[in-house]
Length: 117
Image 1 (cartoon, rainbow, N blue to C red):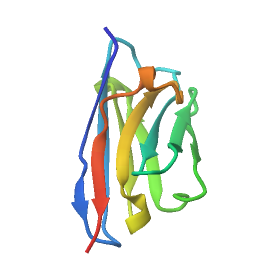
Image 2 (cartoon, one colour):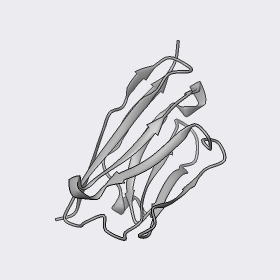
Image 3 (cartoon, rainbow, N blue to C red):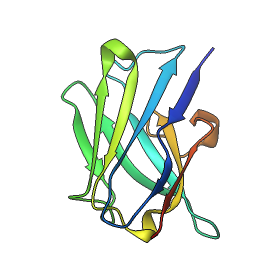
Image 4 (cartoon, rainbow, N blue to C red):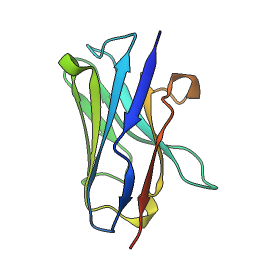
């Protein structure tokens, strides 16, 4: 059974950092795209980051470039999202997405991130 379980969300002050983790089961991360989406209240979902293929090429939304870093540990079946220099507009529920798909059926349950002083 395919599962994606996110963790690491919480409350952080502007300028602070968080690292999200997503442990996957039922499939492996070898050569498979994996990414993160987010949804803020009243806003459209946004693709945040995606890591693709065997060369670990990464793609980011313009809104997070230079601040967020996606990575994965294939041995641990885990993908990470390191978030630095965070802003209030980063407040959202963050979802791990198999194949970097926008289909919610391929997402985990999400983890809440709140950036506020």
